[in-house]
Image 1: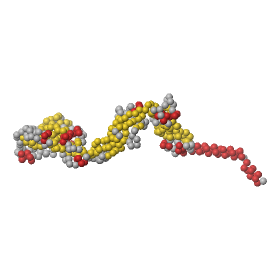
Image 2: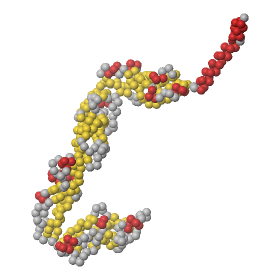
Image 3: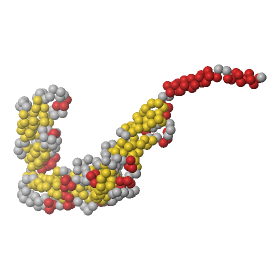
Image 4: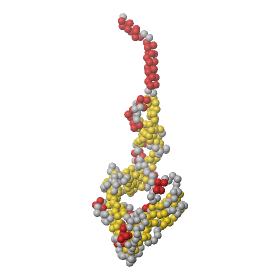
Length: 433
């Protein structure tokens, strides 16, 4: 009797209970989809891997990808799944076996192995990748070296030997034909001793544009390219001259100067250790019978010690000047920048050629001339120069008793209107206090 009562209670309104259950399940499904819906998400720049390349390469051909080999991928999945998927988990492949022989189009297949079965769909955009097949080409190039960076202070790079000297590049004929130069690129920052440096291979076309190596191969293997870099020490030393012969009677030789006065040399530290100057023999400067200065351009490179060279070979020609003075005279090359300016109009400003000099020749007893110091005694008076222009202005020198100028000297100065924004302070630098 009890069992009958129990059975009766379970089956009471059974159809209504089933409807209620189905409705509840449907309602839960709606709520679940509202809270965690299927949404699309786009993942950019996914690389496409081409598989079964041997279908082409076994026939003695190669392929090149037209346009980009990266695609965008649109994934449809529940929001909770989308939040877990990252770009590097997406795999895009193009199987050459599925290529359309007429168009070269290969469909792109998208998979996300780490989320298999969790997403609704995944498609590439564009859906195909296009390739072009052509014959294989091969060419041999001599490697040149390109160095970037700066060695340690006081050092410079010398000879650079690349290993290997040549490289073989293989790829599509059309791309091989574009290569005009193969370069081993290295960085020499901070080097102070001979070093073997690993190099990067860079290929260039005729317009010096870098060529992508993505679809090219070479014979470098795992060892790559290395460059043996010789590092030399640098040093600045003066150039010293001797002279041969004697000046004319009544004249004397007072010294020899050069432009430049010193040069930069380089070499191994052992070779530079004892080099303190470059000595040019008197056979290069003959002053026999001279009554005025003797100038000569001399190639000093042949007087460099063994193992030593000039940092800049263009600096090998040095202009030497042997000064010849008449007895009882002294010649001074005075920098125009050191001349004091007096009585300059407030509306004008002064300019002159950079490194300009004025030659001053003095007469007097040898004792007075030897002690003569005119570093603060040379000036010009601009009282009568009141308009813009370029003038030869007489030079005044405040001299001690017993010393005189052998001939008047002039200096070329340019006067221009002073710009309004120029401060009077800048002009005070030229004016005598």
